[in-house]
Length: 365
Image (cartoon, rainbow, N blue to C red; front, side):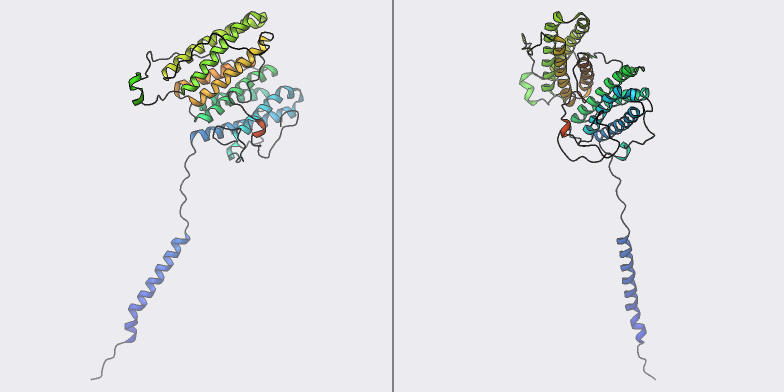
């Protein structure tokens, strides 16, 4: 018999299979490496940031409309000029970081795509601009009820100023005043809790901190209201007859606000603010009482702006109503509540607006 020698091809088969399997594995791994992984869906921005972006979008749209209306009708430029100036400053303030400190000089990020106004969008006449100001102002105040502290104050001041601007522009242009901007009144809400929830002194250290408002901000509001009451009482006998009626009404409002602030401070477990026997009045207070009352009201605007930032829940809603009424009273006495009432702004420290339509030097800068 002939000897059978092993077939060399038969011995190579396992090796070939191993090589082919390795090659297939390399190809598959390269394919997986080249296919990009799906990007995770970006998280939704927090409410305060969405509220800021919505406010910025509305302000830029109204500002563009105001500029177009002022250019198309020079007879309306005098009435529209202050509105455009207001919206310009507000837009710059809303471009600042959402830290609640818009006066801090920082590099501003561009507004979101939704905040870029189109040429065809927005109000087409003065009446529509008045309506847009009222709608935007109401929305900003509503968002301020929920936003974080510093952003709540910015939104509250922005909305308050827009409602005031809507009423002023409507009066100057001879168009109807929207109901939202007709007048805030003084909404002093009664406190539902008859007894203080504060723990007794021995148990105070073990009790959790009250989740109402900052007692310090409430105490400041109490002090501002007490000083306002004193100032109105001193000014009333020296005011002109035309001013005496509104001043008497405002005095009653301040007494109610002071009482409500005292009660809210008690519920927040704050230290009682003693009633001062008197206050030092500004030089010239009695010589020009109307102007002095304007400065006095401006001080209450700042106090309520601080309270909006520090308060929560019903206390914040109460502070928002008080802020708006204080700003209206400030304007009644000829004082300026500012472009964002309740927040002190340094326009020189605000970020600039992105490229786009710019107001003329006679309107805003």
